[in-house]
Length: 171
Image (tube, rainbow, N blue to C red; front, side):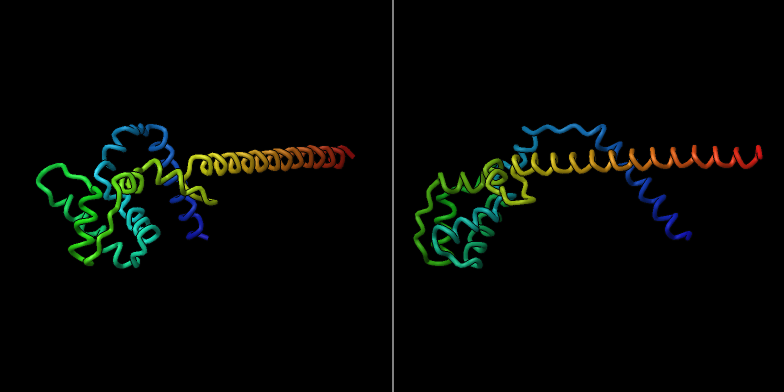
């Protein structure tokens, strides 16, 4: 019907636009990493680390990290989330002396580490992304093979039909 044709047309148009974007896309990994440098984008991992290692509740950890993010965002200078900042905020908000180490904060806020540890099925870890890409490529190759077989069968059937029709016409 008309709605199906319109949907197919819209999808085709969207795929053409997407193909153009991807074909001309330039990725600058170091620039991207600079944008992550202050640590706000990895704040959830920092909160999760506080829950795992320091037995804070989920709410407490997110309150501490939320305040740390707000502090660095509102700072007039180029500040980052640091262990002393996290420890100070935990003391102010919760009355807890956490003694979080700088290495723990750095690891939790490191974007590369954050991606690499997410190696679960469907996750963003490089090995998992490669596995998914290889799996999709194999499935695509299988689909192409099936399509080629079907097209060959259709071509053979068409030739058979034409030959049979020619035989009828000649008789």
